[in-house]
Length: 357
Image: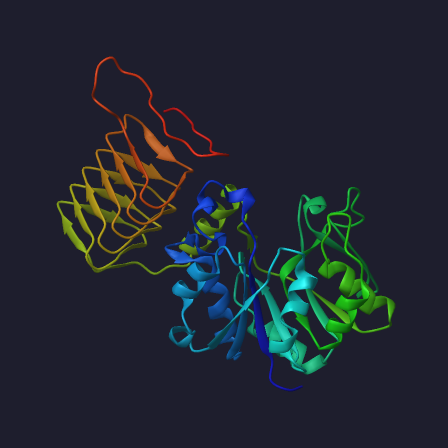
């Protein structure tokens, strides 16, 4: 099999992560202080794929270009491909056809995380040379995913978000294809939601007698499209970190696997890992609990934070209780005013959720 190319889809609007994604691409929301998108690019590089196309939307493409650059920092060459509208994964494949040419390729959803990378999967694809290889994992809510039915170890039927799933095997956001998928994508019609579904394209390959191999994922996989998924992915990644302290500790205690990046300063603080404190952060008289990622240049004082993600330059001050299971965007300020009479005062965007301490 000839050299594989990579295709990362990074054009979705991220409606389930609003209001964060009103101002930032969902693929750039960080997990353990690294944008989700970067995990996919690194997985490509580690699998020996050095030509990677990234599907971007007109609205967020500039931000993604600025963040990932030309790919040299990852050891790959990045090519950006604009998809004019979010018309489905198979539409994205057709949009990238000129870049992909006659190469087999790996398609990776840019807001997904897969434990252990894709090296073994790419090796299996090269060795067995199927027309397509799909990754599957059992899920408790298959009606929210593309679902596959197998017979004697072979894929026989796929359906996108079925109302009555026949199996619990969901398609993970990593696919491997030969160029025949372009023909399949042109042969299908838009679904009821107006999109060219990749499940329909794969089903077309099955119906044409093409060889579609399934691979059951053994480790964890996360689609980070919702708050609870982001927090779960943050937990899973933080569980793999090795602690090291490069910042400054002043009368502070660090327990467990904690990363404190250069330029961070902690005064009279307690941090219990796994956790990560970003570069330039300033923490005073606070507690940071397990599974917390504090972004660069954040400020926390007289507060407790646990099981949360704080993006760059967020500020948390003077909380009477512990903030937990939260995701704060960039430049967010959370604190208690000391005016009288005491009252709650909010400036909140669409689709937000607030829990009062």
